[in-house]
Structure formats: C-alpha cells, structure tokens
Length: 344
Image (cartoon, rainbow, N blue to C red):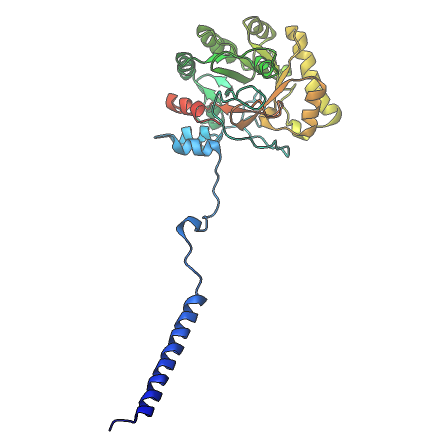
C-alpha cells in the first residue's frame, strides 16, 4: 500500500539526512589522516659521511679499496695487524688532523679558481717515503710509501699536463701580491726528511724541472734513514724549500709554554744553522694543531703552515691552516689524476 505524499516526503528527507551524516563521517575520517608526504620532502635517511674527499672517491670509476682510502685521506684497511713501528719513525705520523680551531667554510672552487684575496686555489701534494715498502706486513709503511716507479709516473703526468711546481714559500708570497704564479701551479711537499727524498725524489723531480718543499724534523737530521745537513744544503741550492716539522715530531696541539717554544723556535734555529736560511713555512706533525701552536708560529714570523686536511690550499683561508692532498701508497695513476681533478 503506497504511503501518502506527506509520508513519502518525510522518508526522502530522512534518507537525505542519513546520507549527509554518512558523508560528514567519511570526510572527517579523511581529514583526520595526515596527508601523504611529497617525494621531494621525504625525510632523509640517517646522515652519512659526506665530504669532498668521500664524494670524489665515490665518483671515481672503478676505484680500488686503496684508491678510495686515499681520497678519504685514510690509510687502506689493513689485511693484517700493523707491525711495530721502527724506532726512527715519528710517532703517530699517519694520524689525521684534530683541532678545536675551525676556519670558516668557503664556497667550493676547482683548482685554479680565483679566491677573494685575488689569488687562486692550488693543490699541495703530500708525500712521505719514495720507496718500495720493505715490510709487506707494515700497513702503515705501505700507506706512507709511494714507489719510485709510481712517483715517476705521477711527475710525468704533471709535466705532460702543464703543471709547474712552486714552493710553499713562493705560493704564500704570490698570495700576498709579492710574486706571480706560473700557469697551473702545484706544490709538492715531502714530510719528515727521509733520505729517499734526496736519493729518489730529488733526481726524479730534477728530470722534470720541478722542485719541492721538504718538511724537516730538525733533530732527526743525520740519523739513519734521514737526510744529512749536506743533503739539505744541496736541495736548497737546487731550488727546494727547507721547512720546519718541529724538533722531535710531537703532537703540538698538546704542548704549551717552554715545551712548545722548544719545538717551534728550537727547530727554526737548528734549521737556520744547517742551511743558512730561516724556515718560513711549517707542517704540523700528524696534522694536529691548536691555538697556542698557531700563536707560536705567528710570533716566529711563519708565513704559512699546512695540515693533513683534504682540499686545495685556499688564499682566503688562514695561511696557517692550509689543506693538502695526501698521495698514499699503492694508488693507480688514474686515481692520482682524480685526486687532483676532484679536489675543491
């Protein structure tokens, strides 16, 4: 039996009301859920190490474990426990820079890019031994040793690509506007004063018309395995820079007062006596530095100092906190090229 028009209208109104109520509930439930996060705004995963050196290593095609270790300024992962260090080896020589002094970061720029000071960023290569590592089980010795053959290939590569060496002193003078840099300047540094800097590096560099800066531990001069005074004098006469690496290779970030002065000023006096020329540049042992060590260098009139931190030497940085590019043992020539090309 059909209802009256009034009852049918009432039923319709009830259905409409029910539908609107259901719609409201659905909409409310939809608004209660958080909106989907756009892909571009997805939360980042846990932070991973990301430095120019790390990125360069990851971008190097077919980089070996040793190549990647070089570009991150770390020694290759040891295959066996490291052998005990020889007594004459400075303690902690492969350690990385540790300091509370942090210069302001600068915009990235490639080698040769101008800095705000009007100079240009320059690669400063860091070497230790130029030799065949005599002990295969000495992983530290391996990472510090570039073979004479590899060194010769690297120097030939630099010459073929138009690089010209300058000493760290010459670089500092050019940045002050007191000299001009050649095209594609590069600084070659050899730390610690090992004898093979004279017997292996010197003749190879001379073949290419190159010179280097040698950082000397003054009390080690004349010891077994280290250069003697006459070697330093010959290198200096050939255009090398003889620079300071302290008297005994301590961690200068832990020194102060008379002990710090002894290491800094004592080394300068001893090197001046040996060569007849006062050193004007410095390398922090194991790359470690601190405010007191930097203040001591300034009091002594040093114009530049290098760390072990990865990067190009920057004219806009504190001249006592210059970066270098570590050349580790066992890397390929391609990775050597990438080390320089990818540096910022």
